[in-house]
Length: 297
Image 1: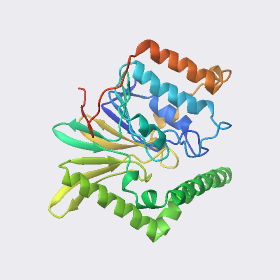
Image 2: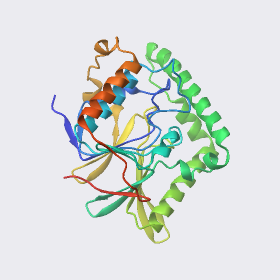
Image 3: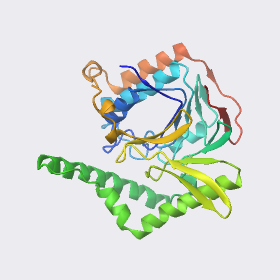
Image 4: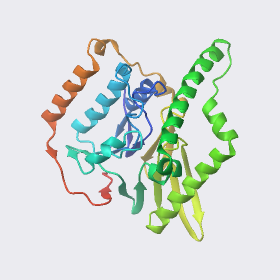
């Protein structure tokens, strides 16, 4: 199968290690594309809710696929979010083409694109971390219930429903929270002369122009792989939201798990690290507040 070329791929809020993660669907998507640059914009592995007992083969296969991109010399930038914030202590770490940073600035067609996860501008995160973690557990439970509801709904010939979206859209405070978040990050982007600002964190995929005063900025959010199954792509001079549910090519990809089933996650991870060490060199460069990167052509 010929893979579709993508100049820039931005993924966020995958939440590997949780029941709600759609790792199989993400794998199907990744196997259909050939990205030139990848940005992992936070909450890739959910360390908040990580359990040793729950780490399916498909979750490890996602990690393996991402590592394979690094061994192929594809630039991969990892921006930790609040659910994988432990990785922030490794800011500035580099392994081959993998770099860990808290924010990233890309120059794309002479336009400046600012990328960060966004949790630092979340009032709940900053002032009530215990409440945010409690909310994350409740959200994960809601997603699990949603899967059960959809299972029976599909059996009865009905369509799928999203309980979490329904809750978000019906609660005025939730809608206001999203709007305040967008306004805050857009104002900061304008103040720093960026043309685009890209976030994750709030699981709401969107591309839209925001006007604040006389200034304008394009706000983009890559969504998530819990309920929306979306990503941001930049190809042929255009930004777009990828939607797995509208991609029959990805949905037809066969994910073969049998050949991996005899390997435990620990053994698979050890093999992957050996592969990376054989193909890359480890360095720890000094890092500015923001990494500046030029998109490869």
